[in-house]
Image 1 (cartoon, rainbow, N blue to C red):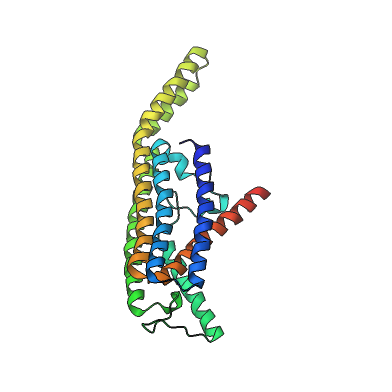
Image 2: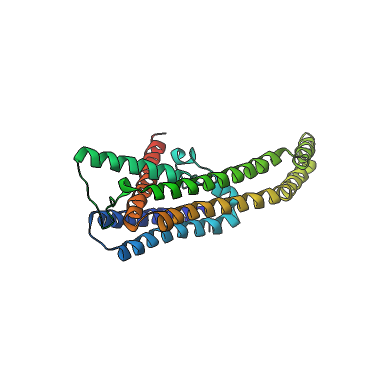
Length: 257
């Protein structure tokens, strides 16, 4: 998959995400049953997983391009963590949306309840749910830190003995004036550099896969294990809106540059 083809895939994927967002909003404003909502939430999660499967396939071909994705805007890239969003961001979205919906209910003096006498949207998170969210958040942050530490070691390895020795050897060869030597040094450097970087690229690809796995697992745990079906709809609306609108803002900002 080339860069251009992946960009095309991503644009199509965004269009589909907009359609999913419309379906979620309609469900949030309707009277759909839990079975319908679970199916809808599952399809939305499957759409995210489709992106990560395609991304993993391309990362196997060019992990450096995935870690500096051309399909992301400058605004989005500034907030990337190992080629994507931080999994712990999901909890900030959840708490932010819960707080906003709670404030709205207070200001409108509304108290809608379901059969369990609990507010249906994220304003009605129960103490048990908050406890589960807190536990998952702590586990997720712990794994984030572990992966961040591993990434730091890979990044630091750009200055290990093999690379420093190679940069010196190639630099010495480039200082020579003989054209034949210069041509041979260019060939030498490309071959040697690739050999020196191949292991580092593999480690980056492994870290990217684990980071993406954590992103997907976090979403799945929140949607399927903690929230009710209608609460999950509200959560996925907030996730989709944040992703799509930040992408739009970034595109407009890049066009002004």
